[in-house]
Length: 144
Image (cartoon, rainbow, N blue to C red; front, side):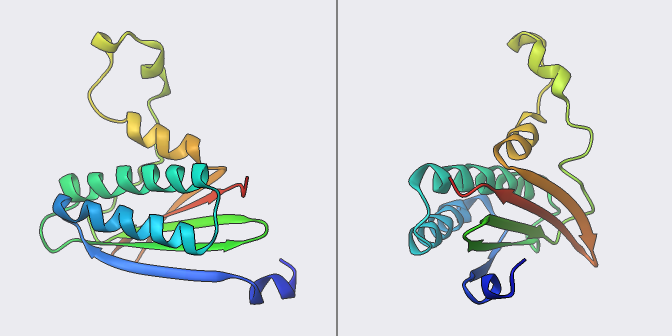
């Protein structure tokens, strides 16, 4: 990255309790930051959809009432980076994506897993890492 690009970045991170009742606040935060960063509306909607999928999965399967999730958005002229982290049990949502399920009829598809494909495919780049007691998903989105 060019040294001047670092100075032009706008950063944001916020942590939420992982309860489905907090979903509105999480998505509102993403929308607010998208507007503050002057991101195109279609990109903001993609970010909201991805964060909603990750957050609901954390709230439902991530280990209970004490679990937290954080959303970090970073943008510059090269793109938008979203870092989603939670304190749930180790789980890589990008692993073993069940793409073969997409070719089956709705009645024959397994329950679950399709949202993980959505998260992966809406981003330009995706990776997972376990950092201490946190699952961290890094996603990059093209600026247009």
